[in-house]
Each structure stands twice: as structure tokens, then as C-alpha cells.
Length: 161
Image 1: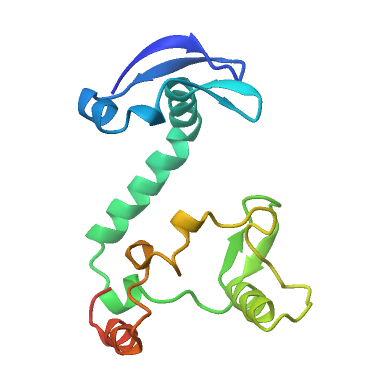
Image 2 (image 1 turned 90 degrees about the horizontal axis):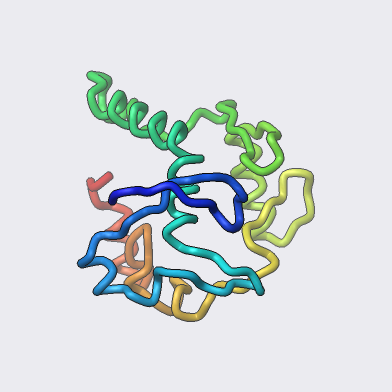
């Protein structure tokens, strides 16, 4: 991807404009160019460049942490273990810190339709598009097959990480 400097319509700042590889443009031409989204003109290449520029420090930090994890001599059981109950994580939207225990309790409360201070949900405002819903598109499952049940059990019992 090469870049040139232009103004981002939505960000209002000067950013590099991403140049998309020709094979990607030919395979997915409808994804690129200037689009009207919610009444606003958006240039996809400029927005890609703006996001890349804005998120570069976080991406670099994540890749550095990943490299450190992969090169760590710690046993696999430690490197890839579930978080401890009292490990804390920052909510990127609110800035609030939650323990792993609180996050899991919120998942359980959501599943049981129980109102609690830890209850949380994703995307209550917009339904999942039918073509992207993992329950109706088995190829989109991220954690392995869930149907038929024996495939789910085999996936859970698999030694794969």
C-alpha cells in the first residue's frame, strides 16, 4: 500500500491516502472509492489511511506484545492461560476497569436475563445482518462448529489452542 497526502472528509485532518493493491481492487471493486454513508461522502482509501495513522501506536504495541508472548520461554499452560479472576481490563468506551470475574458475571447475567451492576451487552441498537450471523452461517463460526453437537464436543476436547 502506498500513500499520498490528502484531507480526510470525516476526520477533517490531513492524512495519507491509501493506495490499494490492484488485485484487491479487482476482486472487491465495490468496497473502495467515495461512498455516501448516512448522507455523508466518505472516501474509503482516505479513511483506511486515517485509521492506520491514528491506530499505528496501538497496532505497534499489540504486535510487540504478541512477539514477546510468542518468544517467551514460559510454558504454554502459563502463556495461554485464562486470566486470573482478579485481573483487570479497561473498558475502551467508558474507561472503567472491570475484573475478569465481573466480566464473566456480566455475561452470565446477560444470558440469564438478570439485571445486575455487571450486566453488559454488545450492539443492542443494531441487529446482526442475516448474511453475517454466525448461527445461520456455519462458516462464520469463530470458535469452531456448534452443530452437530458431536462436532462441538470434539472441538472442545481438541488439543488445538
